[in-house]
Amino acid sequence: MKHLENLSHLYLSENLLSSIDGAQILANLTTLEVSQNQLQTLPFRLPVRLQKLDCSNNLIQKVTAQDFQDLPDLKHLFLDNNIVSLFEAGALQKCSQLSNLALEQNLLLSIPLRLPKTLARLDLKGNAIQDIAERELKDLKQLQVLNLRNNKISALDLKALEGLPRLRHLYLDGNPWNCTCTLLRAREILKAKGTDVKGGRCAAPAEQQGESWMSSKKIMKQCEQHLHLTEKSKEVKKKPKPEDSSSIKLIMDDDDYDYEID
Image 1 (spheres, rainbow, N blue to C red):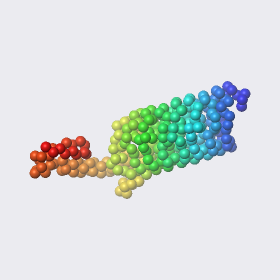
Image 2: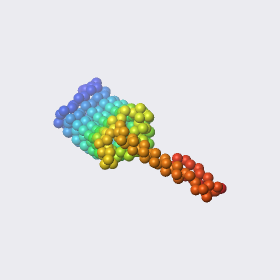
Image 3: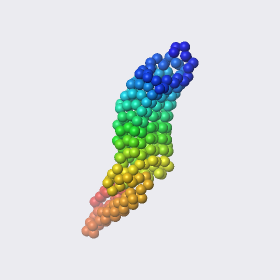
C-alpha cells in the first residue's frame, strides 16, 4: 500500500479481515470502512487526516484512549453491532471534531464518560444501560440527537435533561419505564425544550403497565390528583397552632421549613 499515498477513501467491508495495521502510511486517507469483518480490536495506527471510520459489525470488545491518540479530524465513528463492554472514560477526548458516534447494539452498561463536547448525535440503542446520569451528559451542549432505545432504563435524571440545551430528538422507547410523577415532570421539561420524544410504555407500577408515559391521560390525571393532595397537605402543615401563633414565625422556601423564635 506504500504506493497509494494519494488514496483518500478505502473500502474493505464484507471480508474476513481479523486485523488491519499500517494504514498510517496512507497520509491522505479521510475515509476507512471495514464493517462486517472479524476485527477483535480497532485498527492500529490510523492516518491523522481520517474523518470517517466505520468498524461496525465486527467483534470489537473495548475502546481505549490509545486507539484514538492522533485523530484530531475524525468526525464520524461507527462502532455499532460489536461486543463492546469496556469504553474507557475520555477515550475520544482528542477527537476534537467528532460529531457522530454510533454505539448501538453493544454490551455497554452505562453511557461512556467524558465524550467529546462536539457530539451532535449519539446512538446507544440496544445496550444494557440502566441509568442516565448528569455526569455522563453534562458536557454535551451541542447534542441534538440521543438514541437510547431498547436499554434497561426505568427513570430519567431531570438535571441531565436540563443540561442538554440543543436536544431535538430523544428516543426512549423499548425501556422498562417506572411511570412515577417524576417521569411526568421529565416529560414537561422535554416538551418545554421543544424536544421530539419517542417515549415508550410503562412497565411499572402494575396499574399503569402498557400506558404510554408521553401521552397517557390516565397517568396525568393520577399525578394531578397526587399534586392536589400534596398541596392540601402542605396547607394544613403551614397553619400554626393557635396557641403558638404569637411566638412562631414561618419562613417558607418550597418544601423547606425554617422556624424563627421571636
